[in-house]
Amino acid sequence: MHIKHLGIIKYGGLIVISFIFMFGNIFSESLDRLPVIGSIVNVFNTTFFFQYKDNEISGDIPNIKYQKEIDDVLNDDINRFTYAIIENFFKEYADDKYQYTKIDYAVITDNYLWFTLKIDVLEIMASAYNYSKYYHINKKSDKIIILDDLFKDKEYKRVINDEIKRQMRSRMKENENLVYWIDNADQTTDFKTIKDDQNFYFDKKGKLVIVFDQLEVGPGFMGIQEFLIDSKIYEDYLK
Image (cartoon, rainbow, N blue to C red; front, side, top):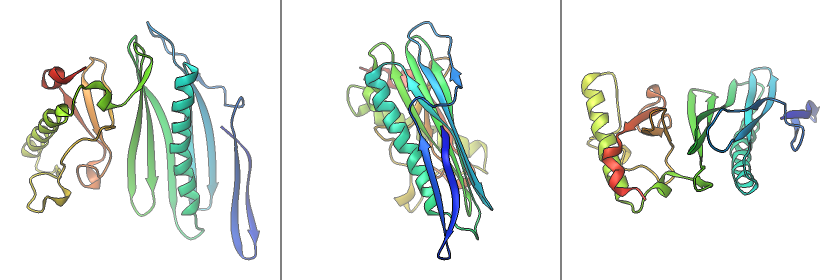
């Protein structure tokens, strides 16, 4: 994305930040053509940047080209997700404070069956906050998929939750510096269950990986947390 117009305007003692994002056919020509056996998903990269004093926001926003019906839904959601981040940055904008926002993306999987795109966000003000959003296309069904779509009933959550809790306890036992929100006397903050649209992806070996944003299952210093789930745990609940 090119910024067609961006300015800092002083008016009546106030600073007004103006910016217009131009979309359509003017996406920057950074195109990832990915070698796959099945259908090809093209990803166009849209770049933007803004900096003034101690305020900076930059990013690469993906735009997917696969099939029109899927493209329209995914790109609309991607735009709404990233625009909300940009809008929040300018809402928090002030000359006398520091803030930094970075938006990036990566293609996690692109094979004969799955295409998975991850958008990463880093926001720094008083402290740093990392979070991600994953998008999945099942090329066999040509559908956009969330985690819940993979399973025939909600029982899958119970077995995956149990496995995640087991891994949390095991990690804390092995490393006393790790802290997960589990088994606390005050259980209001304890991890209870994954969401229907929980972040996930399949790794290069086809293993399911459940992903939690920073502060989702532990204190900030833990960062983003991932849990590898063996297929034997959930395979009976797959569609």
